[in-house]
Structure formats: C-alpha cells, structure tokens
Image 1 (cartoon, rainbow, N blue to C red):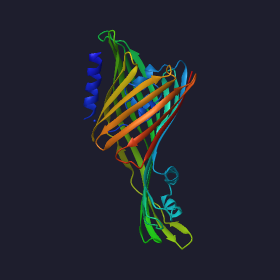
Image 2 (cartoon, helix red, strand yellow):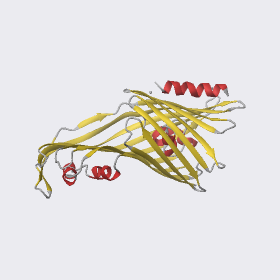
Image 3 (cartoon, one colour):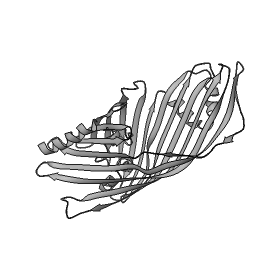
Image 4 (cartoon, one colour):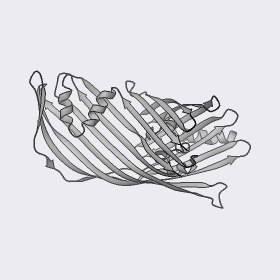
Length: 363
C-alpha cells in the first residue's frame, strides 16, 4: 500500500511543476484532466491512444462528448457561426455590449474492437465590443481533427507485465478569422484576415500495469502528442465598411486579396500519468504530468463508486502556469449506455461557466 501511494504522490508532485491538456470527455474532465493512465473509452484518442487497448467494450462503442466554456452560450454560438463574416456579427450586435471568450471541444466517434475512428473539434471565439457601437475586436478559430487510433498489446519477456502501445494518425482541417473595426460608433471599417487549411499529425503512447502483491495494480502511461504536426493555411484579406443610420446597421465589403500561404507547426507535448485503486474503499486516484514548450501543468483526480457502482462521483484539480481549475462530475451506469456530466470552475475566470456532457453506448 505504501509503495502505491508513494508512486502516485511522486507523479502528482512532479505534475505540480507541468501546457494544459484540454478537458476532453467527462471521465478525465471530472478528474481534473488526468486521463493518460485512466481513460480507456474513445476519449483515449485524445489522452493516450494505447489506453484504447484496455477498452472493456466487447464489440463496439459509440461516444459523443461535448464540452463548452462560455459567459453567454447564445453569443458564443452566434460568433462561431459567423467565422466567415465577422463584420455581420458586429453589425447584428450593434446594441449589445460584448466581452467574452467561449470555447467548444469534445470527441465524437466509434470504437470497433479497439480500433477507433473519431473527430475532435476545438472551437474558440473572442469578442470585445461596447454597446451601441460598431467599433469592435473579434476573432474566431476552429480545428477538427479526424483521428484513427490503432494499437497492439505486447508481452516482452524482460518485463513483468504486458505493454499496450497505440498510435493516432490525425488529419486536421482548420480555420481562423479576425477583424478589428475602428472609426466612430456609427461608422467604422476594418480588414478581415481569414485563413483555412489542412494538415497532419501523430500521437504515440504506451500503457502498462505494475502489480503490487496483496494490494492493488498501478497503471502507468506515457504519451507524446502532436508529433510532426502542422497545418498549412491559404490566407486572404478583405476590407469591410459598417454604417449605422439610426435604425439599421449595414455592411459592405471590398475585394478579397490573396496572401501567401503560411504553415503553422504545433510543438509536441509529452505526458506521464499514473492511476491506482485504493483497496478497501475502491477510490480511484489518477494524476498526469504534462511537459510542453510553455511549461508544465498538473492534473489530479479522484473517482468514487456508490450505490453498487450505479453512480460514480468524480473530482479533480488542474494547476500550472495560468491554470487553476477545479472539476466535479458524476456518471450513471445504465445497462447498455452511460451518462456523464461535469462542471468546471476556473479561478482565473470566475464569470465563465464550463460543462462537459458525455453519452456512451457500448455492446
């Protein structure tokens, strides 16, 4: 028992030194983002592809998970829907005072006999605008990663346990759009910068289990994300002119100008994670330590079953450079599907509400 706690706490301590992985899926999301050695459903396509080899689904699994952070969900969705025409969003919102950053992410896909096919969306919008004004600052970004997850379990003679190895092959479509309008409250102009592109990337991970006799099992996982990952954008600009005549805001546009293509390279990140069940009380403890070029972050979470495992309660924290989140969640197990929900509070943005909802169907 002492060995297990020392190992888990060591990883947790090191994690307190670690960029923040997203809170994808309700299990890891409810446990502070600790998912490398903890998540074995289709969300493993984000956390650790090797963990999908531990899936307990006999034939297939369908998963839909959506997470959102917002101060006003209607404004966030409207802004995301106007990525191609941000000037119209500003004009339509003439009377509103807007100041928000909203994010939507998640995973949707299927796992068939430990082969995963999923889509991971990451969308974000930021708007700053005074009421009764056409002067504004708006940006929208989006990325959709189509991921194929494959893996295999090995039993090397020089190790006391099997090792799961997994890889993600990712095809990425992305876009970005921004405009800053200046002038007066009723007559403003700005230039939209817009880019859309595609790219590729890979993740590779491993997961193994160490048995502590008469005590418990300790899962340890490692993953390298965003390897060789880049997106090439086709860029263009277009001027916009906004006018308010006292009753209606109108938008006119000039000719588009094509710019040189640009390539954005994503720096890889490296994560180590551990999880173990505390005997006697069946408390699951999981922790991740993430290393990126911008620093390190920690993720620590707990999961506790009640009502004969019908309900699982979760809690966690995520801390690091600019990161201070607390998560709470729950899962209800039905015969062939599960329902999960998470609430996230952010000490750095107390006005933003964050939720994650999962539906999993397996057979």
